[in-house]
Length: 328
Image (cartoon, rainbow, N blue to C red; front, side, top):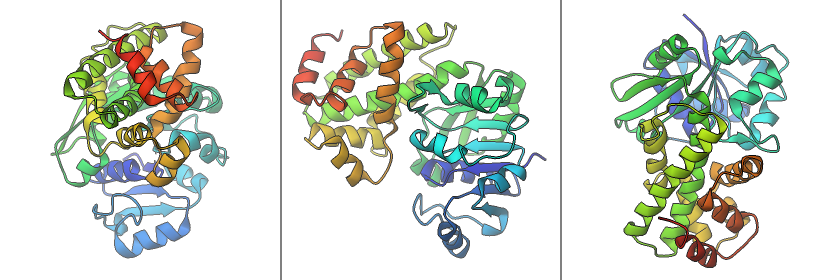
């Protein structure tokens, strides 16, 4: 049986570990801080994230050294917030070329402005057929409660996608497969941006009617951009695209929506980040997509509006008012 390692210790990493342990007898788990590992072993819980999820520590091999975790594993599930991916993997001294790497990072590599699978391919020479992504409407908090959820596994090798999907399928998680890695990954980045937009508009007292129009236009923006990046016969209405965007925009568990609500209430970006104590991937994704789109020049009025609010420090009230005239 392939040895599986979780790389990361946040809520999403904890949720994926919980799912995988329903299908395998044990996992490896890289958690950078030894004191977190010690507490985890004592209590059977992640002390900082998803604390209501209970684990059997006897089924987990913990590592504070990423290279030891990699050496002992065949499949790596990368669950590190996008701003820290380069920093964490800069410690890697072992070849990743023969590893199967599953990216659960719903963000891009800052400064590089490329998706994680492309970066892993160019930086570590990992073949594309060994790279996969996880997408779909699936909040970690609901996984902790065993609530029915749906995941899409994307990989260019469809048989490998099928094999990986078996790792994440159980009685409360349904899985589907896709070979549209680029589309799923870009969509996973962009849905966070539109969740910020939804949060801002909620704080500005725009109602459900407008939110519906906002989301309708948002999925069109995702379709236009993903088609420009990589033209495919993807079904943008599928749960891996539209479903993921809707749950991120509407759910009370969405940190990007929460971040947007705080921006709409008048918080600065810095103040909102400090108060949340969690990463809102959409903040970083906004800049990445905005800069990437300078080359492609796709019409993305909502994305442009959120960039103006977050990075040009323009008034949310004024920017959203101007945006309402551009939506259909």
